[in-house]
Length: 204
Image (cartoon, rainbow, N blue to C red; front, side, top):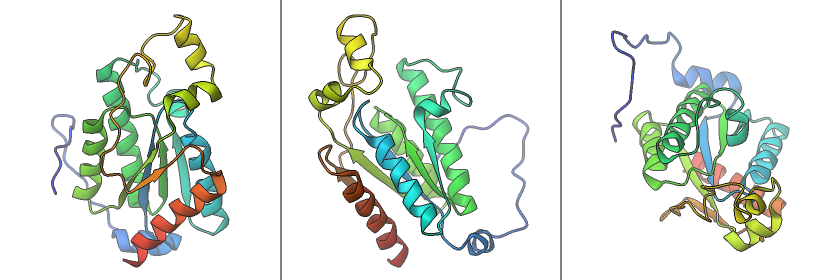
């Protein structure tokens, strides 16, 4: 599957001397991207961080690309209107692709509300022959609002904040994610299910 990629004008792709297989063998595993999508407060970052810790403890290189953290630097110039959200997803997807190509498991935790933007990231990975797994943390809005770890739902309901995904901005749920995790599942159980997904893909 090919994917259209944006690039600067007058540039040429510089091929590496190392093959992907040599890079992956040097770190002892295959790269992949696990993309956690869901509403704010769904638990996706908590699960992704726990997966990262489990993988690294088992000797498999992994790195968490958290949406809020990326907005402290790489995506700090972006707002929250639809076009900016799509660009946020695109940039995160390109970084994840590089990490996966290097042999890491990139764990992306991003609301990523629009299906087309998520599908574009998947297409880029598939075009490069890199595994991509979409994990939907499907905690319902009522539970996310009850948890509200960042206070965003309360601010949105009071009128202090607008454009909160799941309240006054749309969220397009995945139709065929590789894995759906309900918000009531214990973190350890969720981590085990993500690990099983990666192992199944590696053995298949």
